Amino acid sequence: PHTPAPTLTARALHARYGGFKALDGVDLTVPPGQVTAIVGPNGAGKSTLFHCLAGTLRPTHGQVRLGTRDITRLAAHARTRLGIARTFQQLAVFPSLTVEENVRVGAEQGRVTDPTAVDRTLRLLGLDGPVRAVPAADLPTGTLRRVELARALAGSPRILLLDEPAAGLDSAEVAAMARVLKALAADGTALLVVEHDLDLVADLADVVHVMTAGRIIASGPPDHVLDGVGT
Ligand code: ADP
Ligand code: MG
Image (cartoon, helix red, strand yellow):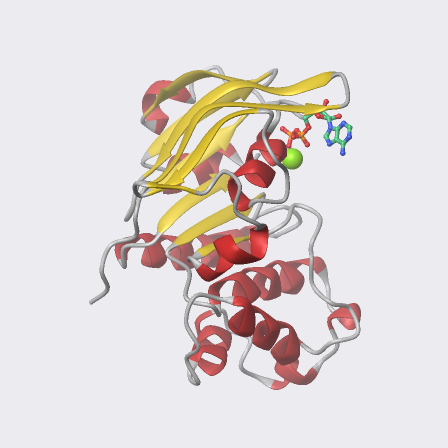
């Protein structure tokens, strides 16, 4: 039903924090209708890569492209308007706003203004009951991960960058999250997922990239790549 997402591409990305090299030449393609996963130890540069893709950190070298367009110098909010949404490893919900209000903020920042988006997204993530009126500050992590995803989804993104979406979830919540993410990919969304839960990665990902020390050191389908990776 939807036109496929354009491909998000990183070419030779380098990023630094002061003198510290956090990305050391990363090439990555995030194609539509697929789940691309990144695994690797703490400090590998996974979140830094997300910041460069989302526009919250300017790479020192290299390029980020959306389709054929060079977006390397585009601000984060402008990328959101183009359909690149992201979630944060450290949740970025507004504690004093209700679940519904948080999702509404996401809808307003997004690619399209769709009056049904808030209700549809709340329903998709099982947040359409009484919880919709509860302030985020009063909710457990498992629910907040869903609110965080709903906030990103409400703007109808074509590319979704998820930084540890299963962190703090119990196994039933992980299974529910996996179902939602698979449905989004089946609908043509391009998903890039950083995740420590390797069972979830094996279940979800079409392609896995292994990152360490600011580089991608292996890439392939999960059954080829995940053997022997401990994160
Ligand atoms: P990952 O998400 O793979 O755990 P990060 O991208 O968060 O890794 O971090 C990569 C490296 O950059 C780590 O060594 C981390 O300590 C460092 N780093 C991350 N953010 C900052 C920052 N704001 N200032 C300085 N160093 C940072
Ligand atoms: Mg991280």
